[in-house]
Amino acid sequence: MATGIKDKVAVIGMGCTRFGERWDVGAEELMVEAFEECLADAGIAKQDIGAAWLGTCFEEINVGKSALPLAISLRLPFIPVTRVENFCATGTEAFRGAVYAVASGAYDFCLAMGVEKLKDTGYGGLPSFTGSNAGSLNWQWFPNMTAPGCFAQLASAYAAKYGLADQDLKRAMAHVSAKSHANGVLNPKAHLRKAVTAEQVMAAPIIAHPLGLFDCCGVSDGAACAIVTTPEKARELGKKDFVTVKALQLALSNGSEMGYNDWDGEHFVTTRKASIRAYQEAGIANPREAISMMEVHDCFSITELVTMEDLHISAPGRAVQDIMDGFFDRDGAVPCQVDGGLKCFGHPIGASGLRMLYEMYLQLHGRAGERQLENPRYGLTHNLGGFPQMNICSIAILGRHGD
Amino acid sequence: MLTVTLIPESAAAEIFAVKCCGGALPDQNLEIQIENRGTASVAVVSRIVLESANATHTIEAVCPAGGRVLPPGAIASLYTALAPEVLARYRHIVLFDRQGQPYRFPIQSRL
Image (cartoon, rainbow over all chains, first blue to last red):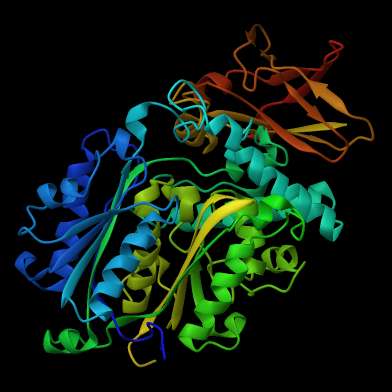
């Protein structure tokens, strides 16, 4: 009988670049920058790594196809390297590959690397689904669809279901963004490091009503990585109070949301299902009490708001109240986006999931500097790739071994 | 009734530069935050005039280009590139609605 991943794999090293408009380097240098920090942190030699996973989404505009860019950039010793892509869950997908490879007993040490270099296109957003290089089928799959437009509909549906006034939802979303920017000020690796007020967020130009400019995350360049091993190997290396994976779950839409028969457009079916499985895997009965901190996919402020309910942290319809009560602020009961989130880091797709895990890892080791929380126990990360009606949700929970 | 808050070195500048069209909106450092505390909607156009005792300065390059519509209770901002020391030379900022009606606000008391 399957017993899940809890405490079978230890994270012994992590690295993360400064995110931003990294005109000074290519994707290769970003990977090297993250890897050097990670390898030094792990305290092993590069030759000890048995296999590696590379997560990158838009390979056409940064690293190129195959997993060779990772093998070549890091001069890995002719080991198996696999490239993975799963929309915005790509970074966590790379982590999942490495974790399961160690858990299987196939390798002692594995590397998961996520990287994306998006700013070289000169465009403020993600590469388009439409345009001359989109092919003929995309027009049928995604007619007139934009990410802000789809997530704005999520906001409208949520407001309609719970009878929220437009200004009340706007103010809660503004609190989400202002809170993340306040956290990002404290993070030297964040892209945007200036505080904004809730009033500034609410006053910003509308992108897709009710989402304004500050409700939308930007794009950026960055890389993050992790080295994982077994708890036994971690002990052999002299690691104490090391971090282990408590849960690792993935849920993908199957098309039922797009049928709109059972789904009213105001929540993420995948997040609800993946989070329940993650809590079961980690042995968590009451996530609102047990989870100490979170990094969730705040591609838009409304995504974070709705996700608080889909993760079963806030009761249905209660996320706005929790947000306005400061429940998810850095000094709140369950701090969310302690590192600044996608709002401050931007979203280099392949790197984001591992960047989130990096913050949880630092926090659990007490190495988060000015952002350090008091004695966190379980850290949850959440990625959502795609759109409300069709997406990939990955959830990871980290904690100290044996806790 | 409109109220105005001026934010001379707004964090919005950095965010505009990153998120909007690959840096096509640089240096939007002056944020003009407007709140409608009245009972009727006001449509503010993207044009401001700065006034001192002996000079006026009209700025047409105001973002967003289409102006802002403020329903009662709403808050909305206009943005432009203006050095704080230039702003400090003026005593009033004047906004206009679509009918051309001016709304004049003191500057120094807001900074």
